[in-house]
Image (spheres, helix red, strand yellow):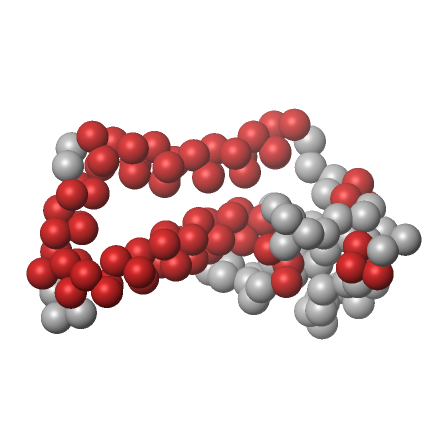
Length: 127
């Protein structure tokens, strides 16, 4: 087996043993899974609504007119990805899943979020 696939992300002191499969890590039911989906969709829908009202244009104009100028546009993707990761990690922690743990059967794109530090706004809930 590929060593990249079996390499585990550093675990927090909360969980000393890493799961081997996603099923060992995630015990949510379908309604609980829907909460994760909904929590991610709320900011997305807010973005879509704001975009339809011209907020995106105003943000870009304000960044370009700021002291950093057009170079500030390079920061926007990193800021929005950070916000997305924060929402995802917070919802996972709220459901009792440590976002820093990667099961051995997962890895690579797109499930490489465990390689990054957690942006969760709350601690992992003990179930």
